[in-house]
Length: 111
Image (tube, rainbow, N blue to C red; front, side):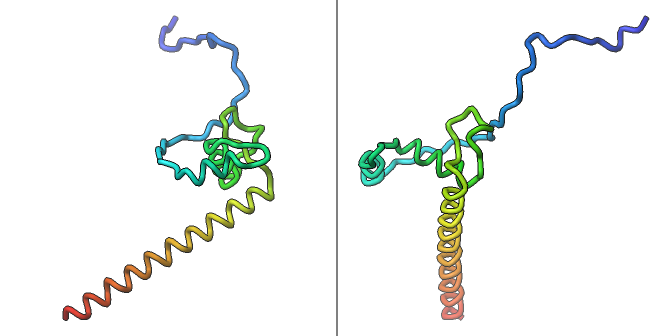
């Protein structure tokens, strides 16, 4: 009899897998205006909750697929988050293009 193959039963019963997003950390200092805005709502929301919902909306993470605090608020919120992301991305591209143009102009002036 060969001892090459060993079978073992799992020690714990297998649970249904729940989506757990890969996480990176981000530490930022929030302006007082932002935390005040969050607190001033009819139903106050913490800054962390607001950011988590925005991320979930942007990435389309539905509430039922995760045990983390990331949960989309639905299709309308997802659309708004994606529109904001597109606007912010375009502003960044425009800024980068302007900086690139001014750098090229400076090189031409040197020549």
